[in-house]
Length: 137
Image 1 (cartoon, rainbow, N blue to C red):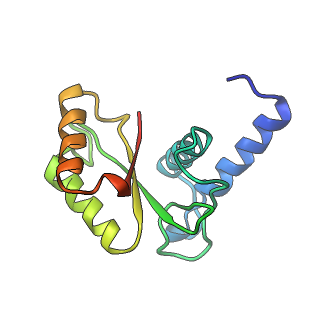
Image 2 (image 1 turned 90 degrees about the horizontal axis):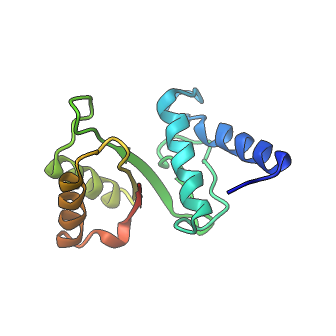
């Protein structure tokens, strides 16, 4: 997708705003920039109702869609880095966020084994959580 310089600047500014994490005093980090990148990619793909925003108060996930639904981005790794991929842990994290009123964006970039990705998709479906999850990659 080719975008104009103006559109690219606007997207970069939105990514910066989304990356400022109120749960960490408004600070940004590599992780919060990654979350913002994933959020915008899903919005652009029509998987999140936009425009998405980030609430300034703590405890409202990583973004809020245009319908007022809070979303939390979760990412795991199957190459030894932390947080280490484990289907049961992922399901527990998803269930917790859903109990708190949030939905979950699963960033699968760090899950490189196709069997692990498939196992997680199947577990989410079997647990009846598919409507609460959006997938990136």
